[in-house]
Image (tube, rainbow, N blue to C red; front, side, top):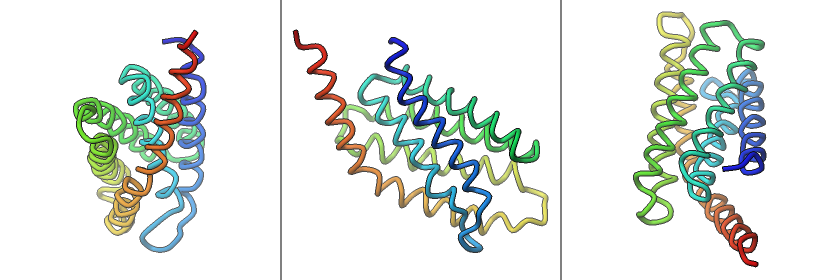
Length: 178
């Protein structure tokens, strides 16, 4: 793996994490923040990396997102939220990479869908319980809305996943052809 392979996905991951950390501060309604729509794209990035270049690159990209998220969260949010966010992110991303890798030989859609769904459930449970358990904040309602959007996005991101993997795989094949 070379530096050129990781630059674009790492920058994409950093942008998604930064956008999500900013957008989570803006409620759409009592059930959602705008961050619920941007965050699931992080799974798309690791899934495309995993399919095209393997789990090692996907894990490295996830760690880049973790570092970005930790820095952003520590500047934008209280410590409890930053710890919850970072913990939820890295655990769910590494779960997504591992589950995807286990399912990679099955139908094209199973690995990204099941990996993203499982990771979304874990991310939501870790983040909201660490960030808000024991507080007066109505977090269960927000967690339910957040999870519903993440699950919907797991389905909606399947066509972009398929298109990106096809294009990147063709580009890789052209680059290897003398």
